[in-house]
Image 1 (tube, rainbow, N blue to C red):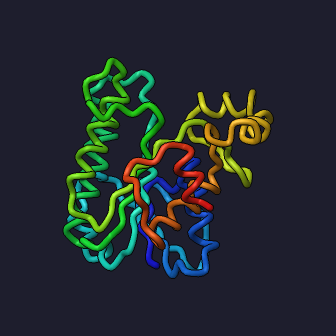
Image 2: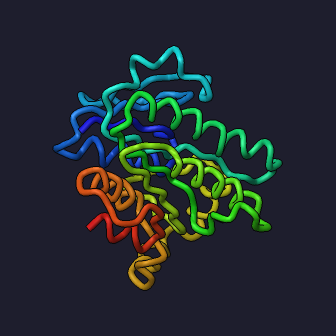
Amino acid sequence: MKVLLFGATGMVGQGVLRECLQAADVETVVTVGRSATGQHHAKLKEIVHTDLVDYRSLESELQGFDACFFCLGVSSAGLSEEAYSRVSYDVTLAAAQTLVRLNPQMTFIYVSGAGTDSSEKGRTMWARVKGRTENALQRLPFKAVFLFRPGVIQPLHQLQSKTRSYRIFYSLFGALLPLARRWWPNQVLTTEVIGVAMLNLVRHGGSKAVLETKDINAAAQ
């Protein structure tokens, strides 16, 4: 399996990268982002690319992949809907539209969020934008598109979020997350589970396009 990974420096992306590098059936992992992860591994190749809405110069390097795990995202805090859309919608669709042309047999998995608004008409700005992004991705003719809507995520293996507010949350409540996961297994995910679920969906497919927390947990089994 050859995997393309966007957002490998974020908390979720770091976890997904770890699982890809450990999987025996993953031959190659290529990361694409504005900065390198700093990791070194025989399976890993990193592409540092600053313009995430234009991939014309990279097309020869973006062919021949079985899967794309799109974990790139930012917090909507302090952003207008237009600014948030540029990152969450424009960047995602620029990559997806390029990849579906180059790799039509690819499985594309997008990390969205719990509460995403598929109607695109709700009151919550980020949920509308994520819903519009999900809907646009489902219209592309990939082999398969899966949309992950995680809620609370427990970072494992010393992984950290790049978002300051999330780091504060984890410093205050991180010790409680293992207990929360035990008590409410369908409400809390781990970074490891997300990575394993993605790989399993590429290996075996899935019956649902939109996966909530309990679905992601099930896909990892």
